[in-house]
Image 1 (tube, rainbow, N blue to C red):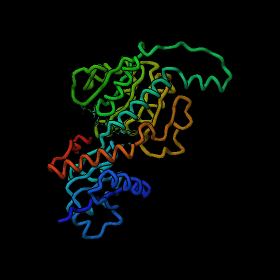
Image 2: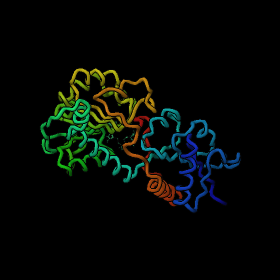
Image 3: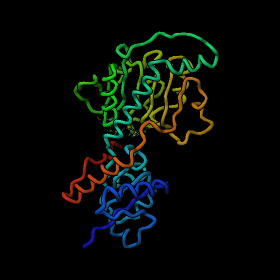
Image 4: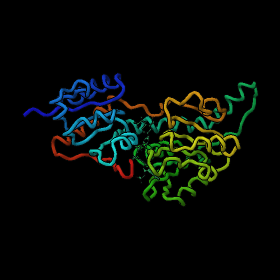
Length: 315
Ligand code: NDP
Ligand code: OXD
C-alpha cells in the first residue's frame, strides 16, 4: 500500500513554497503536499504534518494525524493553540540554528562590550570621548535558558574569553563553559554577577513576564539585556522604567510580544534600546530540511520519535 502523504502547513504562502521545495529534495521517497492541495481522501490518510506557524484549524482537519514536526524551535503558539490534547510535537533542534544563534549572541555581546550604542550617540553630538575598554575576561555574561541554543552560545562566549553563567529549570552540573544555576536563588546569584544578561528562554506559563521590575532590580547596576528568546518574557513598562532610571544601560531586543513591533511602541525610539526584527537566528531551510527528513526516516524505520515537546511544561 502506498505511504500516506505528509501534510505541509504554514500560514505564509511563500514559506509553503520554499519548504515544499527543500523538504521534497531532502525526502525524495516521501510525498509532501501543502494543506491547500490535499484531497479529502489524502487529509483522511495523513499521519505526519510538518508545520511552520500553522492555522490550528488545518491541523485539526487531519483525523488520522499521529504527530507534528515543527519547523520552528519555539513552539509556544502551537502548544497554546492546539491545547493539551495535541498530538506529539517534535520541534526543530538544528546545530546550524544553534551556531547562528551563538554567533548573534557573540556579535551583540561585542556590540555592548565595545560600547557601540554610546559611541553612536556620541557621534550624533560630535563628541570625541574615549571610553574605558573592558576586556572580555573582566565581564560575566548570564544566559537565561541553557538548552540547545543557550549552551552553544555559552561555548562561543567562553571561547571568546568571557566568564559565562547559565540558568535552567532543572539543576545541572557546571560544564566546561559555564557555571550553572537553577531556581529562584540561582537566578538571584546569576543576576548579581552578570554584566550582560542574554535571554534564550522559551515562552511558557512560568517564563511569561519573568523579566519584571523585581528581576530588573536584581540585575547589576549598569548591566545590559539581550532578548533573543520570546518578547513576552519581558514586561515592557518595567524594562523602560529600568532604562530611564539608569539601572540598566541598554537592551537589545530581537523578539516582541507582537510582531512586527507596533509603531507606537516606545522601544522604537528609546535611545537605550536596539530593536531588531527577529533576525538573531534565521532558520536555514537546507539544514532544517535534512534534520526533519532524518527524524521522519527514523520514524518510518522504527516507529520512534525524537524527544517531543512536554505540553504541560510548554517547551
Ligand atoms: P530548549 O528547550 O533546548 O532550552 C530551553 C532552556 O530554557 C532549557 O535550559 C530549560 O531548562 C530552560 N527553561 C525553560 N523554562 C524555564 C524556567 N521556567 N526557568 C528556568 N529555565 C527554564 O530550547 P532552545 O534552546 O532550542 O530554544 C530556546 C528558545 O529560543 C525557543 O523556545 C524560542 O523561543 C527561541 N528562539 C528564538 C529565535 C530567534 O530568532 N530569535 C530562533 C530560535 C529559537 P531545562 O534545561 O531544565 O529544561
Ligand atoms: C523559531 C524562531 O522559534 O525563529 O524557530 O524564533
